[in-house]
Amino acid sequence: MADIDEWSFVSKYFSKNKLKKWIKKNEPWRMENKEHKEKKKMENELRELDKIEGMGEERLKDIMRIYDSEKELKEALRNNKVPLRNDIVEKLKKYYKIEEAK
Image (tube, rainbow, N blue to C red; front, top):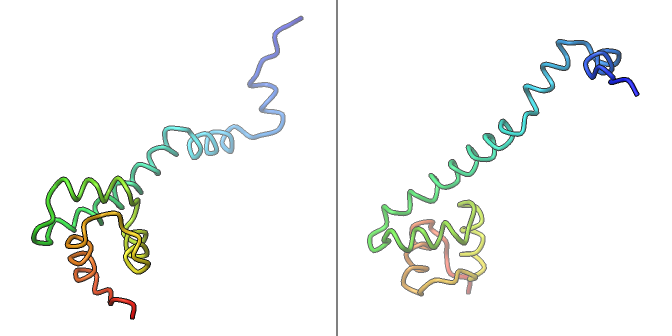
C-alpha cells in the first residue's frame, strides 16, 4: 500500500491557518499550563492563611492537601466537616467570619 500524505488528507478538510490555530489552542502542554495556573491561583488564596497567628507551615500544607480552593474550605467550615484540631478550626472560622450554626 502506498503511504498517504497526512497533510494532503487533512488539507482537504481544513485550511492551513485554521488547523494551525486549532493545534496552538489545544496542544496538551497548553491545557496542562492552564490547569497549573488555576491550581497556583488556588494555592495562593490558601497561602494567605499563614497570616493567622498559630497557623504554621504544616497546618497550611495539610489544608492545601485536603482542599483545592478557598471556596471548598469555607463550605467545609460552614458544615463543620474540617478534619483539623478544634482550635485551628475556630481560628479559620474567625478569619473567614463564619458564625457557629445554632
